Amino acid sequence: GAGVSQSPSNKVTEKGKDVELRCDPISGHTALYWYRQSLGQGLEFLIYFQGNSAPDKSGLPSDRFSAERTGGSVSTLTIQRTQQEDSAVYLCASSRDTRRNSPLHFGNGTRLTVT
Amino acid sequence: DAKTTQPNSMESNEEEPVHLPCNHSTISGTDYIHWYRQLPSQGPEYVIHGLTSNVNNRMASLAIAEDRKSSTLILHRATLRDAAVYYCILNTGTASKLTFGTGTRLQVTL
Image (tube, rainbow over the protein chains, first blue to last red):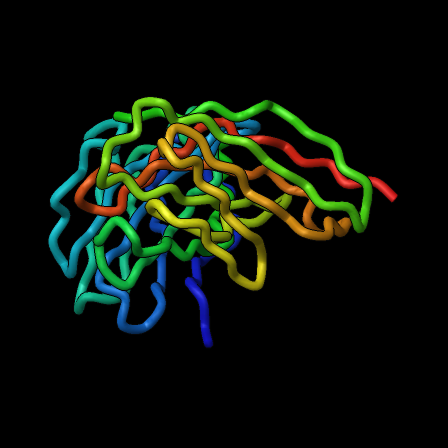
């Protein structure tokens, strides 16, 4: 079946511009997660959704970052006034639910480059 | 949060078994042990998970120590396509929010 889909796969933007990253989770998955991975680094948790609610936003680096999820499906991560340190691969994952034995299924990410 | 310790890198020859170790001495009774791998330029891929008993699936086997303070991911016959970074993670939270460490980079050679 279809996996997690992210778009765009690559995005180059100028410093100060806003960007929107999109994630289409696996159909029926109630939980959705955003991570980012800087070059050569591990994954950094940003935010997760249960349905349309975001119980844990603790990983968002600043108030320039926001995310929403509508209809319990598609999610958008928005970065306002982008900075060069925002350059990274942004990864989305979904899982059937939030139980500890539910595997996460990741997309291949959006590579964001801020020039 | 309970943490895991893995070797930074390992090497294997193709078609030989690979045993990837993970220490998690502060694991609690309800923590699940998850393994993911990340191939170059791709998102992480789920491999296997377990709680107390050993687990097998089409990709790998997971051997969990009796005291649960360590586990081993076993690839029965390594192929070049298994070259990746392997992450051992404890799912300790209520939201399946996983904390990724630096993992073990597995190199597979002919």
